[in-house]
Structure formats: C-alpha cells, structure tokens
Length: 482
Image 1 (cartoon, one colour):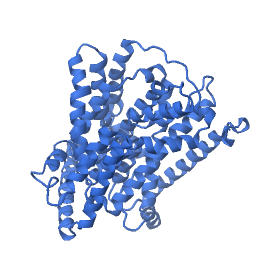
Image 2 (cartoon, one colour; image 1 turned 120 degrees about the vertical axis):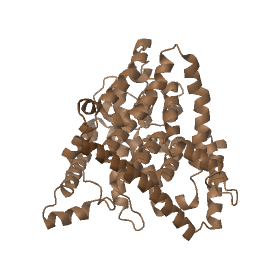
Image 3 (cartoon, one colour; image 1 turned 60 degrees about the vertical axis):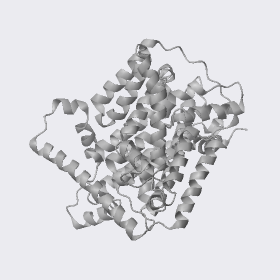
Image 4 (cartoon, helix red, strand yellow; image 1 turned 180 degrees about the vertical axis):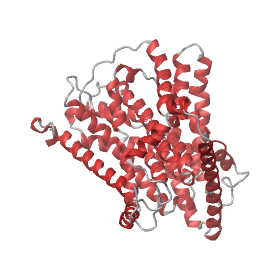
C-alpha cells in the first residue's frame, strides 16, 4: 500500500517540504552571517557573542561573501596566476607553526589529564566488552568483518591491563597509529586502493545518479547545526573547526574523516576515526530501517533498465578529467581525489596490471589491517568515555542517518520528473561507504523482488558519494583550514 506522500494528488509535497527546509537553512545561514559580521557597536557585538558557537570566538567569522572569497583564493586557478606576497607567506608559515604548537599542547594536556585521573579498572572492562562485541558482530552477524575484526582486536589489545600495546614509544599499536593513521598516510593509500577497485562505469553511464551522491552530503552540512545545538548540553564544547571535522562523519567515509580531522581538529582525530569506521561497518544495520521507512513496497520493486556500455576511452579519461577539475577548482581536495584518480587510472589504462592488482589486493589488504588496528587502538576509556566523545558518536550517527535520508528523498523527487523511474533505494548508496552501501541497496531490493538487481545502478551514486564527501572536505578546509 502506498503512503500518503506517494499519492498522485500530493506529488509536489516533496518539493514543498524541500523548499521549506532550504528556506529555513538560508534564513539561519544569513542570520549567522549577520551575527558574525561587523561588530562595531556594542549591541551587535553582544548579539554576535550570543550566537557564535562556543569555543569559536578566536576563529575568524565566515560570512557568505568571505566564504566565497576563501574558496576562490584556494582554487588552483587563483594560485596559478597569483604570486603570494611576503606577508601572505609569513601568515601561512605562522599558521602552520601555530597548528604544530596546538598539537603539542594538546598531547601534553592529555597526558596531564590522564595522570591526574587514571583509568579505572571497570572502565577497561567495559572497553574490553565493547571490543568483543565488535568481533561478535563481525563474525556472527557478518557486519563488514574486514573492518570490524581488526578494529575489535585493536580495541581488545589496547585495553589489556599491563600489556602496554598502545603506550609510546614502543607499543605496537602506538607505532601503527603514529606511522599512518595520525599523519594521514594510510587514508591516502586507502583512497588509492578504492580507486583501483572502483568502476566508474555506472556513474558515467547514468550521470544523473551523481545528484543522489550530492544529496547524501545533506548529512554532512546538517550536522553543523547539530554541533551548535550540542553546545547547549553541559560538559560538551565544540568550536567551528571541530564541527566541520565531526560533520564529515555523515559521509560514512573513514579516510576522509581522518584527513579532515587532521587538518582542522587533530585533537579529535581518534574518536572521529572510531565513529566514522564504526558507522561504515554498521551500514547493513543502520540503513535498511530508514530505507523501508521512506519508501513504499511499490517503489522498492521498481526495476531499472540495463545501463549502456561504457567505452574504455571514457573510463580512462574520467579520472584524468576529475583530477584536472579538482586541481583547477578545489586543490584542498586534491590529495584525496588525486589518489582516487591515480588508483582508478592505473586500473582502467590496462598496461600496468601488476601495479593495479598490487594496489587493489595486497597493498589494500595490508593497509586496511593496519588502519583498522590503528583505529581500534584509540578505543580507550579516556578517549571514549567523555562527554565530547559521546557527543561525536551521537552526532555521527545522526549525520549518517540524514545522509541516507537525503539520497532517498532526492531519488523520490527526481521520480516526479523522470519518465523512466529510478528505484529510490539506490539513493541510500549516496553515502561514501563503497561498496557496502551499494550492496545493502541491492539486498533490500532483492528482498522485495529476487529478480531485481540494483547493485550496478547503486554503484553510480555510491562512487559519486565518495567524490562528494571529498569535495565537502575540501570546502571545509578552504574555509577554515587555510
């Protein structure tokens, strides 16, 4: 039976709802811009201090005009034609030095807090239980064992009393984390592997599915409002840079979350990485209820026509074109998209199969094990059992749910105008969890009709989501990290 939203006389209800949401977002955005703008008078200054996110007082306010100005100054085109002045170079150097000092101060503060408030035995027992639960979900329930098994074992090993596997400088898990997780090295290699494993053919064959990947980024940007609301809870305190790093969790992309947190909020990298990878692994548990809630049985049974064949030339040129566009418009996203494009190009060009097979298999497997162990090594009581950390976990789940909803609703809106309907289930694959989200969309579709194969159709928005989250990361870094 169709729901009220699917009735013919209400076919424009989605557009009305979306318009209202957009209007509210615009009003709130401009209200915030006005509050954070000039404060020449005491009244305006007082208003700004009451609306700015707590902890962001020393972060330069971003208005609509300054946002576009920052993004414009960080495009490759601008940097190619602009010669930096001595003052600009000095400012950039000072910014990097300040970030390094902040990292050192954060590490010292964390050590002092741990010495003043040592971890209690019952807290380690809880974390050990969580580690075994993660392994159970992977082995018994089959929730992404490639990720959850090493994460679970990392959690168990780091919390064994007296083992010291997470202690510096010689603990094995400490070495793994510093070698590739904390410095963004492993996420770059993971993106290279994802590129080598990804077929952009479904996106090229059906470009309109890129809109679904874009709509899923709603979870990323909506979370910024959630972070602001969380600051009203006693014991929770986030600033705007931390808000951006937390919001990226909504894309369900672990490597991107680590990359952004390293640039904007390195002090939160551990718990952000744990939350991002946990939700990536729990896609089969989180998404299906949302998918069934927002779609009717009839919609879930929509069959899509076979995709057109995509030539080798198209597949070879696509990663190069993607890289060129990124270089020209959003260089801060180039490390992620560049590695994705490199991995995909050596796969599609077909003349370096030894390299592509190594990246796709051996290297990807090794880095996945090390990265997952490194993420698990951060599941310690002093990092997880904290109000800010619990807030990140809640916000990450909220962001991921909104991202899933955004893709589903966009697919339903598109069906109002398309002659050849698309199955809304593929909209849920707009998050960046490749290929987990696409497999879940296919599984839910086949549960309604065993002959309805949606996997290749879902891969279009899935890979578009990877690109979209990387672009969102670049926008955040352009705005607050430069």
